[in-house]
Length: 203
Image 1 (cartoon, helix red, strand yellow):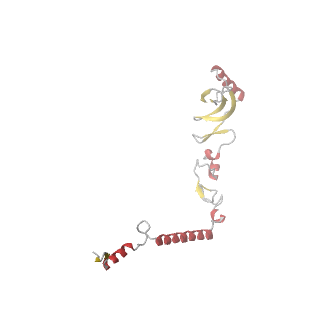
Image 2 (spheres, rainbow, N blue to C red):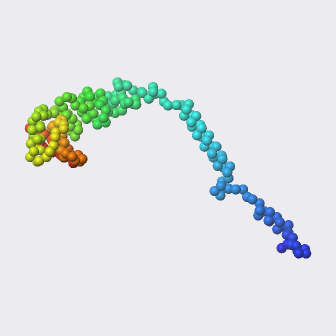
Image 3 (cartoon, rainbow, N blue to C red):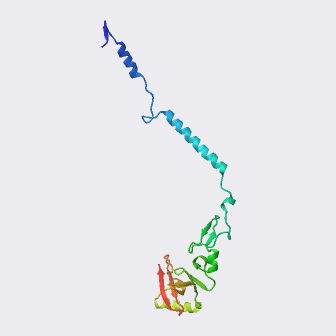
């Protein structure tokens, strides 16, 4: 309690000291714990690390072409091929690469294809002799089918193909109606005896 002199109340020395302590501003904290100096140090360290990374990256540079290309077509062992990026890779049938060994042994037609007069059966991975049927006979068979089923259609293409394990002629027919925007296509599979074994239609 202060001392009363006249009408004035004077604070004691202890009260004055306590008041000063209350008004004394404390140091500001970030997130309640860390001081601004901490974030400054962390930021400087990040900049230094990033700078060192870019410095070493520029000095090393990209690897030279001589380092990448380490093999040639004849340097790989049997059963392997030299890839476009210079590594010897194991040749696997069906990988889309016709290796020297596959071509020499005719062991993988799906990668190396078939010769003239043959058709590749992708299901059996075998080359089958393509059919020799005149387009006139094929056209007659297809036109008869279209007429009997009252379908307006025009043959657009005849190719060699396969159906199951047998070689066939694939005949593509445009069956779209005139003045109609919806597409329509029929595919005829004709065997060696000029018989239609299957017909598919998309419309």
